[in-house]
Image (cartoon, rainbow, N blue to C red):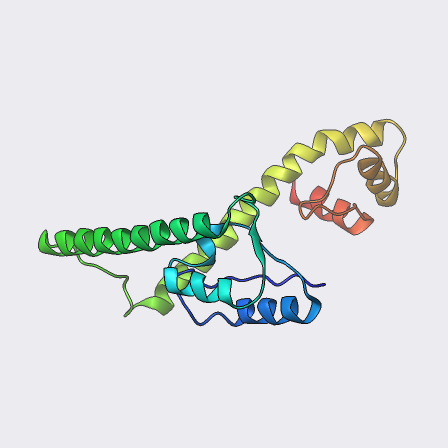
Length: 182
Protein backbone atom coordinates (compact mmCIF):
# COMPACT_ATOMS: atom_id res chain seq x y z
CA UNK A 1 0.00 0.00 0.00
CA UNK A 2 1.05 3.59 -0.47
CA UNK A 3 0.05 7.12 0.33
CA UNK A 4 -0.27 9.53 -2.58
CA UNK A 5 -0.75 13.22 -1.83
CA UNK A 6 -2.61 15.30 -4.40
CA UNK A 7 -2.15 19.06 -4.42
CA UNK A 8 -3.88 19.91 -7.69
CA UNK A 9 -7.14 21.81 -7.69
CA UNK A 10 -10.35 19.81 -7.81
CA UNK A 11 -11.24 22.03 -10.76
CA UNK A 12 -8.61 20.38 -12.97
CA UNK A 13 -9.08 17.10 -14.80
CA UNK A 14 -5.40 16.34 -15.45
CA UNK A 15 -4.35 14.98 -12.07
CA UNK A 16 -1.19 12.83 -12.30
CA UNK A 17 -1.11 11.95 -8.59
CA UNK A 18 -4.75 10.87 -8.66
CA UNK A 19 -4.03 8.74 -11.73
CA UNK A 20 -1.12 7.15 -9.86
CA UNK A 21 -3.33 6.47 -6.82
CA UNK A 22 -5.99 4.88 -9.04
CA UNK A 23 -3.35 2.72 -10.74
CA UNK A 24 -2.06 1.52 -7.37
CA UNK A 25 -5.60 0.78 -6.17
CA UNK A 26 -6.32 -1.28 -9.29
CA UNK A 27 -3.04 -3.20 -8.89
CA UNK A 28 -3.66 -4.02 -5.23
CA UNK A 29 -7.45 -4.26 -5.34
CA UNK A 30 -7.50 -1.51 -2.73
CA UNK A 31 -10.01 1.18 -1.86
CA UNK A 32 -9.03 4.79 -2.54
CA UNK A 33 -9.37 6.88 0.64
CA UNK A 34 -9.81 10.60 0.06
CA UNK A 35 -9.86 13.29 2.73
CA UNK A 36 -12.71 15.43 1.44
CA UNK A 37 -15.19 14.58 -1.27
CA UNK A 38 -15.62 18.16 -2.46
CA UNK A 39 -11.83 18.49 -2.98
CA UNK A 40 -11.70 15.39 -5.18
CA UNK A 41 -13.45 17.03 -8.11
CA UNK A 42 -15.92 19.74 -8.89
CA UNK A 43 -17.13 18.08 -12.03
CA UNK A 44 -19.96 15.54 -12.24
CA UNK A 45 -18.50 13.90 -15.35
CA UNK A 46 -15.12 13.43 -13.64
CA UNK A 47 -16.77 11.80 -10.60
CA UNK A 48 -18.86 9.57 -12.86
CA UNK A 49 -15.75 8.43 -14.74
CA UNK A 50 -14.03 7.77 -11.42
CA UNK A 51 -16.97 5.66 -10.28
CA UNK A 52 -16.82 3.68 -13.52
CA UNK A 53 -13.03 3.19 -13.27
CA UNK A 54 -13.46 0.06 -11.19
CA UNK A 55 -11.85 1.54 -8.08
CA UNK A 56 -13.90 1.83 -4.94
CA UNK A 57 -13.37 5.05 -3.01
CA UNK A 58 -14.38 6.39 0.37
CA UNK A 59 -14.36 9.96 1.60
CA UNK A 60 -13.20 10.43 5.18
CA UNK A 61 -15.47 13.43 5.63
CA UNK A 62 -18.51 11.45 4.43
CA UNK A 63 -17.88 7.70 4.80
CA UNK A 64 -21.58 6.77 4.59
CA UNK A 65 -21.98 8.30 1.12
CA UNK A 66 -23.35 5.97 -1.53
CA UNK A 67 -23.24 6.37 -5.33
CA UNK A 68 -26.36 8.58 -5.41
CA UNK A 69 -25.07 10.82 -2.63
CA UNK A 70 -21.70 11.17 -4.36
CA UNK A 71 -23.41 12.20 -7.64
CA UNK A 72 -25.59 14.76 -5.86
CA UNK A 73 -22.65 16.22 -3.92
CA UNK A 74 -20.56 16.37 -7.09
CA UNK A 75 -23.34 18.30 -8.81
CA UNK A 76 -23.52 20.72 -5.86
CA UNK A 77 -19.72 21.14 -5.87
CA UNK A 78 -19.76 21.82 -9.63
CA UNK A 79 -22.48 24.44 -9.18
CA UNK A 80 -20.60 26.04 -6.28
CA UNK A 81 -17.38 26.20 -8.32
CA UNK A 82 -19.21 28.05 -11.10
CA UNK A 83 -20.84 30.41 -8.59
CA UNK A 84 -17.47 31.19 -6.96
CA UNK A 85 -15.95 31.87 -10.36
CA UNK A 86 -18.80 34.20 -11.33
CA UNK A 87 -18.66 36.10 -8.03
CA UNK A 88 -14.88 36.50 -8.31
CA UNK A 89 -15.05 37.78 -11.89
CA UNK A 90 -17.85 40.20 -10.98
CA UNK A 91 -15.95 41.51 -7.96
CA UNK A 92 -12.78 42.03 -10.01
CA UNK A 93 -14.73 43.83 -12.73
CA UNK A 94 -16.38 46.09 -10.14
CA UNK A 95 -13.03 46.89 -8.53
CA UNK A 96 -11.53 47.68 -11.93
CA UNK A 97 -14.51 49.93 -12.74
CA UNK A 98 -13.85 51.85 -9.49
CA UNK A 99 -10.32 52.51 -10.73
CA UNK A 100 -8.55 49.96 -8.53
CA UNK A 101 -5.34 48.69 -10.10
CA UNK A 102 -5.47 44.90 -10.20
CA UNK A 103 -2.46 42.63 -9.93
CA UNK A 104 0.91 43.07 -8.31
CA UNK A 105 3.80 45.32 -9.18
CA UNK A 106 5.67 43.11 -11.63
CA UNK A 107 8.12 45.81 -12.76
CA UNK A 108 10.00 46.33 -9.52
CA UNK A 109 10.24 42.79 -8.14
CA UNK A 110 14.02 42.71 -7.43
CA UNK A 111 13.86 45.85 -5.27
CA UNK A 112 10.79 44.57 -3.41
CA UNK A 113 12.48 41.19 -2.89
CA UNK A 114 15.51 42.92 -1.34
CA UNK A 115 13.24 44.89 0.99
CA UNK A 116 11.51 41.67 2.01
CA UNK A 117 14.84 39.94 2.66
CA UNK A 118 16.03 42.84 4.84
CA UNK A 119 12.75 42.84 6.78
CA UNK A 120 13.01 39.08 7.25
CA UNK A 121 16.55 39.34 8.63
CA UNK A 122 15.51 42.14 11.00
CA UNK A 123 12.52 40.12 12.23
CA UNK A 124 14.64 37.00 12.82
CA UNK A 125 17.29 39.00 14.69
CA UNK A 126 14.63 40.60 16.90
CA UNK A 127 13.07 37.21 17.61
CA UNK A 128 16.47 35.71 18.49
CA UNK A 129 17.21 38.64 20.80
CA UNK A 130 13.84 38.24 22.56
CA UNK A 131 14.44 34.51 22.97
CA UNK A 132 17.92 35.14 24.37
CA UNK A 133 16.50 37.70 26.82
CA UNK A 134 13.95 35.13 27.99
CA UNK A 135 16.67 32.50 28.44
CA UNK A 136 19.17 34.65 30.30
CA UNK A 137 17.45 34.35 33.74
CA UNK A 138 17.32 30.56 33.36
CA UNK A 139 21.00 30.46 32.37
CA UNK A 140 21.87 32.63 35.38
CA UNK A 141 19.85 30.28 37.61
CA UNK A 142 21.76 27.28 36.21
CA UNK A 143 25.07 29.06 36.86
CA UNK A 144 24.01 29.83 40.42
CA UNK A 145 23.19 26.14 40.98
CA UNK A 146 26.71 25.08 39.97
CA UNK A 147 26.76 24.84 36.16
CA UNK A 148 30.07 26.42 35.22
CA UNK A 149 30.74 25.18 31.68
CA UNK A 150 28.69 25.84 28.56
CA UNK A 151 28.11 22.10 28.23
CA UNK A 152 26.68 21.93 31.78
CA UNK A 153 24.37 24.86 31.02
CA UNK A 154 23.22 23.15 27.81
CA UNK A 155 22.54 19.96 29.76
CA UNK A 156 20.60 21.97 32.34
CA UNK A 157 18.43 23.59 29.64
CA UNK A 158 17.78 20.18 28.08
CA UNK A 159 16.92 18.68 31.48
CA UNK A 160 14.38 21.45 32.05
CA UNK A 161 12.72 20.55 28.74
CA UNK A 162 13.60 23.86 27.11
CA UNK A 163 14.09 23.42 23.39
CA UNK A 164 16.08 25.50 20.93
CA UNK A 165 14.30 27.80 18.49
CA UNK A 166 14.17 24.95 15.98
CA UNK A 167 12.93 22.46 18.56
CA UNK A 168 16.21 20.62 19.10
CA UNK A 169 18.46 19.92 22.05
CA UNK A 170 20.92 22.52 23.34
CA UNK A 171 24.66 22.34 22.70
CA UNK A 172 27.50 24.34 24.23
CA UNK A 173 27.91 26.41 21.04
CA UNK A 174 24.24 27.41 21.09
CA UNK A 175 24.45 28.46 24.73
CA UNK A 176 27.50 30.60 23.88
CA UNK A 177 25.60 32.28 21.05
CA UNK A 178 22.69 33.09 23.34
CA UNK A 179 25.01 34.53 25.96
CA UNK A 180 26.85 36.62 23.34
CA UNK A 181 23.55 37.97 22.00
CA UNK A 182 22.41 39.54 25.27
